[in-house]
Image (cartoon, rainbow, N blue to C red; front, side):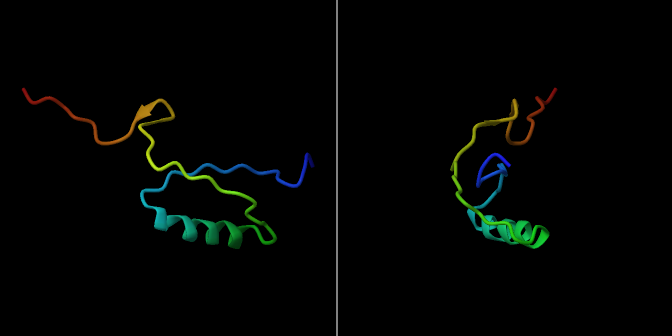
Length: 60
């Protein structure tokens, strides 16, 4: 073990209200886990080198 905090999780949620259900699922799947810290980014324009949103196909 490197230290007290040994796991980093990144999740993209469509709504902030989805955070608590996600944390409940993580806690249920891994008994004894504790959330030490969380950071929220309100707007991501690009993610994993892909643009977010539907692809627009020009009409012919």
